[in-house]
Length: 471
Image (cartoon, rainbow, N blue to C red; front, side):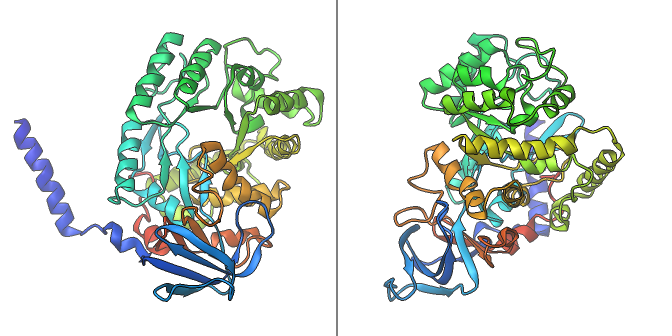
């Protein structure tokens, strides 16, 4: 009977494929030549340095072979020459909170191995850290497929399954029994191929300590979206990164008890009452900086909790399935009805917190976190994150550095990606306009190069319309 069912399943797949042939990886490639020259392009190199006008970038063997003022760079005779007058080249974005799953409702999250990888790459994210996984084997197999050239998508730093304690009402997440369980879980998934870990709301200090110890033993970093453990405690235990910022730090809750997650909404209200420049928050910032703990900004997901902020753009809505779009719009309507929401204040305070953290010497990373109300999805949210960093008070050049080189350095990949320099992989986002003066020009994607291959953004976006929320 099993053989019959398997045969029927395969036959049904074959019939579907015959009815509507799926595009191949090659169908999404716009430029692929042994040598390519991007001429007369403005360059933002990702280091925070000023943009340089009228530059030429030579790509050879998947890497940047030369970069400099047009006319001064020798272009090989066999190069495919592309004139990008009026355009800007910047490093491919390094998304540091870029899940491959999407909220399906009812406390479930579904992986989007079809739509999300295409969207990330199509709009300029050439490297992602998944920062928590609901289906780690799906993510690992997808990475293998992309690396082998069988699928389209960014380079993936696969984060293991959530390291979580007892209390989270999600059937997809394993609840750790104790510190020994944390050691075993980390060791198992390192062997399977994950390259980072994320701890979550209900983890205890003992379980967190064990997670950090085991991960560090294997040379792997740990980040966290915490609730039961405060930021200062986590920093002192040796965590490498903290997600979201002040929005998830519960240590200011007046009734916070060790290893217990208080009401998150009440924790936000408590933090809202504090001055970012006051001693409580400044002590937390100082502790994080002293222990070299990075912070990941995910402003887009929180922006949608504020009724006065704009809805996600039409291009993001077009990518959603009918059900996902209706669910998002209903959620935004509920936000508008909540007149007691603490988020209008918290959203602005989070921006202030991130500025203060960087001013104190902290390393800020960037991501989108495609969860929340369901409107913030792969890459559209990454573009929005860069724009919101500028709104928060960073210069466009600094915001781009946060979203590129800072992430690469945290991952230990700065020798390969994160900035535009000779010898690095040719991961290059080309946009029309000048994001160094108008940051919204980062949305005007013309083409995205990953390892020297130029991908057709428009085709990839078109191929997943209506698919987010389904696959």
